[in-house]
Image 1: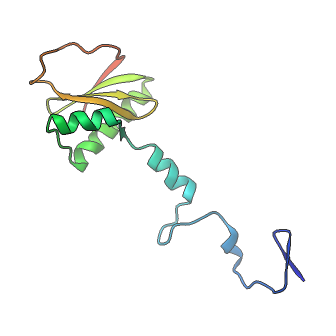
Image 2 (image 1 turned 135 degrees about the horizontal axis):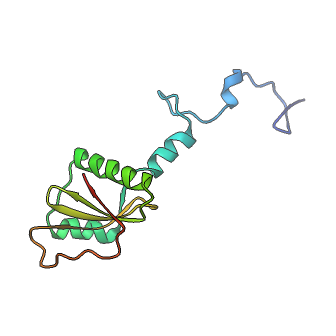
Image 3 (image 1 turned 135 degrees about the vertical axis):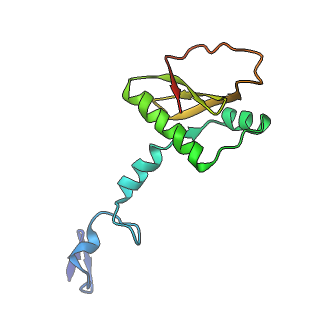
Length: 124
């Protein structure tokens, strides 16, 4: 009998040598780990932030999300922990290590003009 991964099998498997390499996505040469890491590096929105966006009628385009992503990367490179990201008269409080938008509010409509517990401001 032939042994495959420590198991005796009653046949000889016909495979290419690259079939047992890292997992690949069809049509893409990136490994699963690379794709997974790219997804982890994207900005996320907390449930609280999603509710605030909906309640305050703030809609974000893909381009605007990319700008927030770039702002988060800049803040991360400077060692920020909690940052205020300003974009198009909207303020986003972002937890930088988790890459998570915590809340969002339009600046012009706000009665409060105080932002606490932040260590940086990024203009996107």
